[in-house]
Image (cartoon, rainbow, N blue to C red):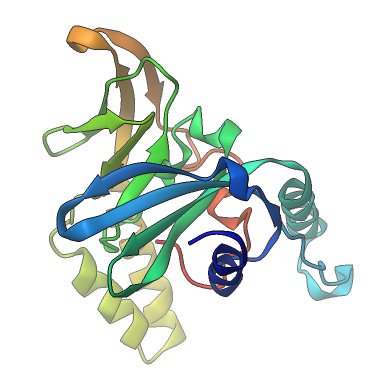
Length: 226
């Protein structure tokens, strides 16, 4: 899938201003003939509605900054392919966010798509720690790793009740309960390990849950990422 075919595929999944086909590389492959490719790209900025459409000036300023980042920050998009199936977008994030474990902090326990993220050369394994479960160790290949966020018992049923709640008052309460449960299930620490398990770097979860402006928005995906 090169040239025009890749451009058409990306166009169906992401809103990008440009990408670099000569620098596309396969980073991970796994069972069932699945292959993941990292594609350097810039996001396409979207128009921000006028100030009268927002309850606060700060909210609009955050969106303006997010759109600016889409234009100027080089990101990479992950595209998963499999024989006989359509390509699937697994998300985009700035290269700078990957250095802080951006995809890990933005992962959602109820959506079971693989998480694939780049790491610096020299990292051979990644360990993700949680509050109430054993850490997950992921092997690094081609400076990238793959893992599936663990499912959290009861979280899907909470989300279903929230979606089906008939009254606004009920939704507020259920939303607070759901967000609290997601926070408890979220990862707390990311470790980059080198040869022999030597610790290269430890990254703790940001206080906000994600690193600054949500990384998954830099590409303005046409489809949900996680």
